[in-house]
Amino acid sequence: MSETDRDLVLSYAGHAFTQWLEDDQAGAIESLTEMRQRCGDHSIAVAACGWIDTAATAAGLGGPGAYQLKWYDTEGQSFGDASDVPPETRWAGQLMGARAALDEPMFYAIWNSAPWPGSGKSSTEIGRYILMLLDVTTATYRGGRAAQDQLTKRAQP
Image (cartoon, rainbow, N blue to C red; front, side, top):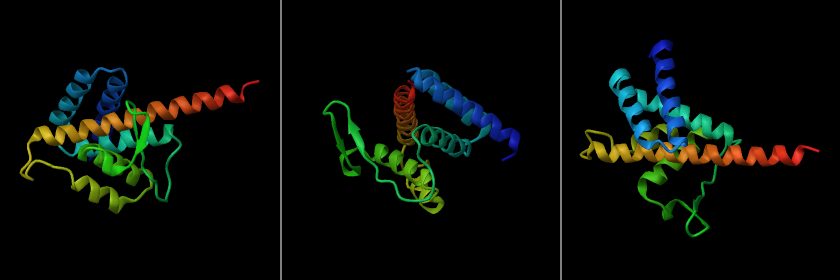
């Protein structure tokens, strides 16, 4: 992928990320569909890395090491682990953890475990996985930004 193509993909991905943050899911889906049509199927992986890197930076994550993933149930107000969530949510969280930990082999193993077209699954199913990744990364981004805002408030005299 050329640098120009990568910049175009990241522009679409950033736009979709912002739309999802602003609760414009339909707009985000439209942006991703246009990105895929214009830039090809491989653009989804580049977008995913951009979303994960953005969220991990906001949350103060990143670097070699293992991350223990926890999911927060906003209705039950409790934390759970990977066995407590649907497969697409688990996939998104594990993918994010592998990328944040700079574990490239694990990242690709998790990426390839998704129900990609040709695996006998419908395109709707992979869409749920990709949109869940977008949802998990934007939620992590929001949480990281909120935590940074709290730290900034505490640091001010």
